[in-house]
Image (cartoon, rainbow, N blue to C red; front, side, top):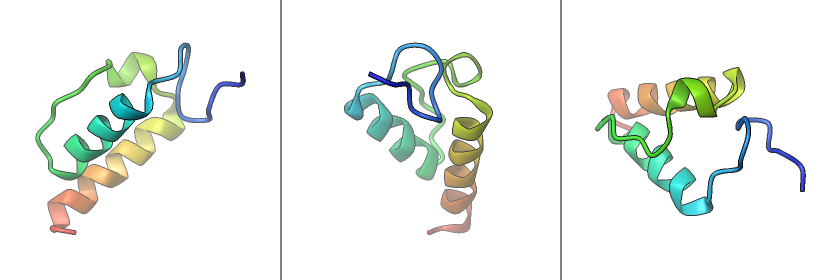
Length: 58
């Protein structure tokens, strides 16, 4: 099994990924995994984009 572009180490489950994305868009700040440790720069950029979208009210 290959590792996705956005995660380092073990792959997050789809439920954990969905929770992280929803939390980012809703700007609640709740996380399942440490963003700095578990995500690559690409994954961190996607999470940042989701936070921005939530801040804009999308």
